[in-house]
Image (cartoon, rainbow, N blue to C red):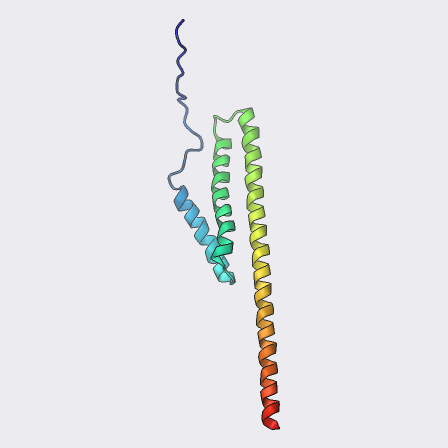
Length: 134
């Protein structure tokens, strides 16, 4: 009995591994980090985790969209890829939310610290003036 031969798939990959993924990821990261720096309170040790999640998920979401538009998408793959797109969209939304919550907390703490410092300095100055008047 002859062995069946497996022929390689001759179709093109609708979502090829983009050679520029690293460049695209870097571009998205730079845009987000630039925006965060512009807004103030950018902390790379904390913010970069969410920035990376957003950048990588946006690239994966784009590839899923390319696949759905291809002619090789079947009914089965269409439902699976649509599900994947929904999950990446949720990941991106959650990362934006967590980034916002983290930043809001840090900025509020910084504002409180600055307010306490202003009050403390004002009180010290008032005490110095009171002591010098005696």
